Length: 214
View (tube, rainbow, N blue to C red):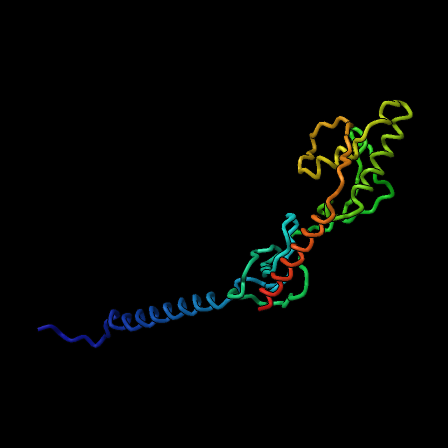
């Protein structure tokens, strides 16, 4: 016959405590997971903006998400959540653009390899500035005319036009070899065809706006 003990068994007291701790731990884990699931995906979302991304492609409607100090996503983010959502309909947003505005009294500097011309410092795409060619030609020709005092053969060169021709064709690189030779194209412009292209682009833009508004 086993004698009864007046002292409680430690195991019998631990079991309820362990069970309670397990339930509490599971509850805390579920609460943490639920809180995380309810947290915003992003800090800020700009909704419905006209996005100009600087690639040369046409603008398009979309949303832009920001997290921390980074652009985290672009596109249709209507189902995404954020701490703040800003209605950007009717506004133009240019993500990734950097303000490269600089001030200098001179736009022609002397580098290790020769004169360096600084034109259009605040324009990402020179093709978007109607005065770009005139500015480039002015400054390149100023250098040409100055050096032409000592090397008269330079006065017959057309480096500005040659560079612009390469630029228009997407072939202008930092190491492009230039000859200074440029033959002007005197072909008459087909103005009617140009107007038709403009009209097609206008109708396409109107169609995009109607689709986005519907």
